[in-house]
Length: 125
Figure 1 (spheres, rainbow, N blue to C red):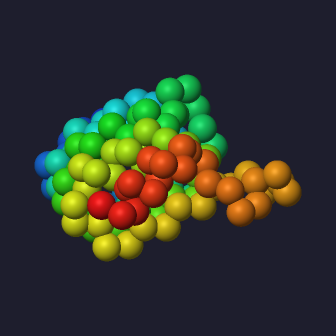
Figure 2 (spheres, rainbow, N blue to C red):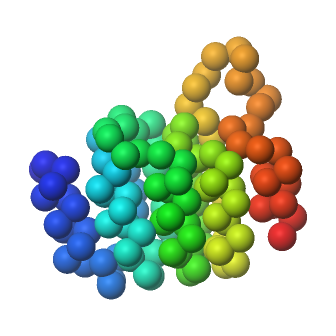
């Protein structure tokens, strides 16, 4: 399925879509923009994605900001950064939050991707 076809499918079911699950898949900025217009999302799973144009922390943050009913997020991908952490304040129903950066080099062990003050605020509030 092409990226354009997937974007059209997302737009077609935007009002009823409740879960996004992509593992080892291509993802585009247009897909992220389409998911940001799905008001009833309850869960997101992004794992080891191959990024196309427009895949950014800001694009993921737009999805989170537009999804007040999110209950769980599993994101094992490098796009979850400071803006996404900050956007969690728009997700008051979060019960499960799993964020793991896929950059496995030694310099990243034990470190978060994002401003630590924003991450602490997101977790505490």
